[in-house]
Length: 316
Image (tube, rainbow, N blue to C red; front, side, top):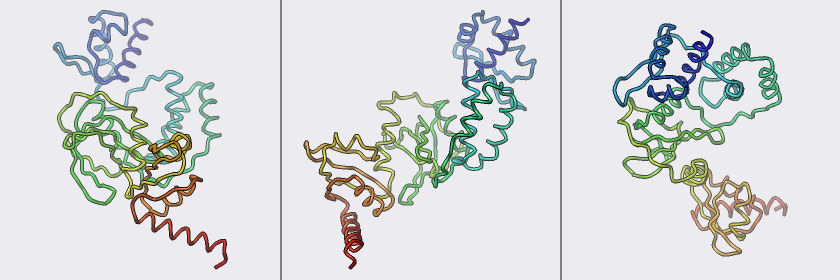
């Protein structure tokens, strides 16, 4: 009986961790026959868990949504990860989730073993969060996108660009990326036939989702690709500046810019921003001489700033 109960718990954990399982896959994971898997699934149903079965070669098992949330089975590291994540979420970032995160964290801490409770408590007590000014995103939008990516379903949505213009998009979602307080979606744009990065707070999802798609192999590191693209493409202004320093030297600095080598002494910096004055100040912080290539409006802003700085030290 004890062995059967332990196996049922493991089966439930597997069903919670993955959307679809075939009978042979579950049997292999549990070290039993497919007939035993069928019997165990019936036991879970008797206990109130909505396990759905699809017959046929491509069939399998799936844990459906029930009338009540079933207990989650977490190992020590998973429990700590969830608790820490709830603590961070309580600090904001997702619209309306702060209070819910605090309630969920309180419930979780009540059932954590003492050793884990101390670990989580210490981390939350000695961590300081500085709230960002980035727009928050409704949690249902994040879960809708994540579920579509998991199920390989196209997303259809209205999108507002950085210039305020709207467009309708049909895209294959691949990853959600959280960067400096903002959420981004990395997707394959079906119409444009290219990879695109979208700000999630500018997305208005249309329902239902589109048809299923066959996942493509990601030809790049997701974090590096999104970071590189956000340095220019997502901003209102995009600038090119000739920097009097090598790309090798400048790329080692935490500037958030891309540097294109010209020769061993110079490079071109690609930088973006929503404000030209901010771009000018940021370039000035590089600590090297530079020349504005484009846009011409940036050159005028740099000229205005230089005059202001000159007056600040000359007294005129």
